[in-house]
Image (cartoon, rainbow, N blue to C red; front, side):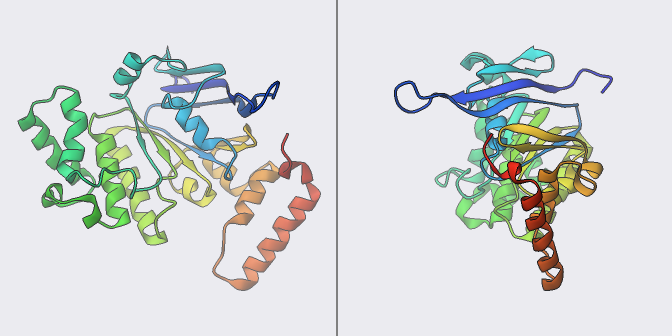
Length: 284
């Protein structure tokens, strides 16, 4: 990158105190480095427990930064206080995994979308106009604002969550497994929506997923996280089709196929990798 990254994570360490007297701290992330340019999508991939969600939470100020640095637009935000975090909400937003629990069930969609605007001292008339624009951006009808979250499907709820993240015109959205709870057809439509929004607004995404096929659709670069460390990092096409690390190859082979014969062959290839590289399955 020739320009300064929008987000820069440098040698990040996140550790939690061990349980019990003299217990060692548990390192969830250990020396993780990556960067995201304005308008770029970086996919962060790994199995459950790899630390990928913790990295997203650290960027959002929801996980403690034990070492290293997180910089946004050149500013150190790794240990930002509450006031600075409130200001950062203008620039950094999040879309969570579960579209059912991420929306307040007692509020109408209009109330959900207006809430962040009111906190930024937008007038109610201005906020109401903005709600219509946000619903249009995520391809929901204007009348959706008068309804409750329970009246929508999972895919529609995720569109509402995306609209809420867009409300303050952020520059970066942390997408934490945003399509993993959806069926395949709905996943494809939500990924297309993310892509359309990025092309129109120039947003950057940190796109967290366990599925290499999903991040390949959207990402410009991909980082593969394993046991708290990045084991592969580079161009999305190269990482997702010609991976260099055995763990990345194993992730590719973990994706299910509809054809039973091909699936059986893939299972055998994955087992061969596990046998050849047993260290990739053990905690470091």
